[in-house]
Length: 104
Image: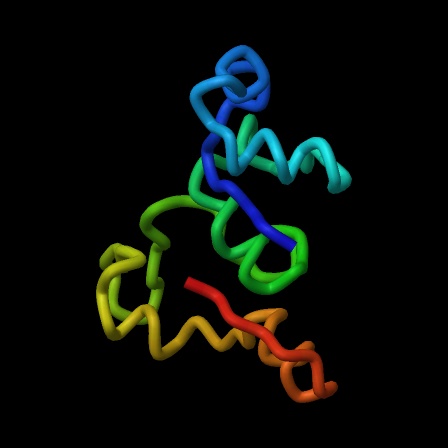
């Protein structure tokens, strides 16, 4: 599987002559446009992809989250929030099942 983040499929299809590797992949592979909660919850896309779960399960809706205990906002890049956001990327489960996996 090859995932292209934030890419316009119509743009790619219009420029296949300038993208020979992608043209080859499209010709021999299967193309799927994924749905996401981005139209309603802009910052929920990456945590939804990462966890393979919808925002109602992973709880990350915005680029910052209210922390009632400390009466402040936590941003995604804040290490304190990252430590509290307990998730396991879906590719860890795939790798443990014996499927060679790489994510970058």
